[in-house]
Length: 102
Image (cartoon, rainbow, N blue to C red):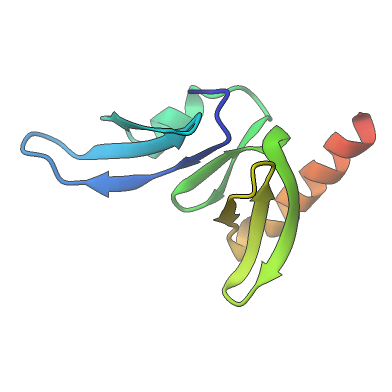
């Protein structure tokens, strides 16, 4: 799962606990863990929570663009994920550092 492109978090009610839907590697996985706990298990500075319910592998990002609802990350495969206003600068700085190191 950690090599996936993006992890989009969504709650699904369950009879026993809240399940989370993780979208990664072109598949959907159901897990029973908080987003914070899941984020703590991911590799160092490669993954970043870019929005309340979205964690992205930043090495898979093509760029950042503006949309009507705010900034979005454009991933290599063309998918787009939202970026919170609070995290936009941090994401752009990380991408600039990553690209200059290559």
